[in-house]
Length: 421
Image (cartoon, rainbow, N blue to C red):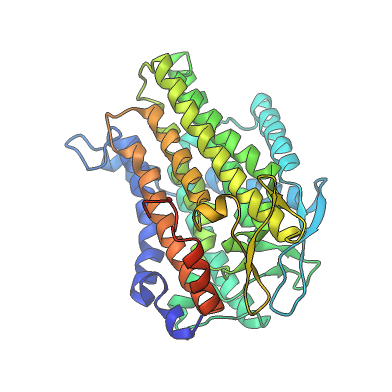
């Protein structure tokens, strides 16, 4: 990708600056809407602005919680039992080692948090009471961390695809594989942030919200249980197949800057938990047949998401011998030697895995029913994000493979949904 094209990413400098400032504000606004505006999207006459602004003030307790949280996850990433695998080849042909211990770390995290809760040193309900303060603390941390990432890429020769603009390069990142200390044996910051603090914190927040609902009403609603189970199962599946993350666009192609850091550390846990947050006080009866339909949508989405990604992952590991749907995998070989899969779901569309993502996102919102549009923010946002990501991937591959990519697109016509898009 040329520097000129890179400048246009996400609206260029004006768009980058707008998102650097706007994303934390929007994250806070979702908190306002769900907690202080009766779960409605637009501010109402009884919106509690004063209480909202008070809740957003950083607290020492929130800083301690988040600091201890990060330390625990760092220690688990580094020392928890797990195997080491090699990532995708870098431009120089080398492959970095990655420690895969997310599933074990998730279990240990819940044991540790459970013991702290029962000991009285920490209550899981504090994640609810300190939610606004945590957004502020986490955002401050991300700004400081992103400055470090910017300087790291400059100092350690990792800079690539730079525009010459501080704002753009701060947003996109200057380092591709920042590690502490630098080198293949260092602690990988991008993989850690992509997989650990945000994802596990997300399900802990859901647990906190379910606990608070129980404290207030004496029971946990069916809708809350469904959302908790769906999203927990998603995280369990993610870590069970953790190695597949090494072939994703974020790990393989993106630099590591504010965009990924904020998305991983703040946006994911504090917005993806919106449905469970909404359900605390929006208690309703979900008919059994509705629950069955929603469960079916969720697991259909999860199956599509996982099956499609595993086909790609297995093909990349052994393209000459892998069999898909009982047949040897077909592929298009580019002039550079890369192999583009044409079999299985990857012959249906170039990103059929996104269909699974969208179905799962919808199933996470449907238990909230239809009294407010707020719980449906996630599937709407996620569909837009995936379409934008597909467009970025298309441009990247078109530049990289040239005429070979055109031939591939002739064979695999559809971008995401066969026959539609």
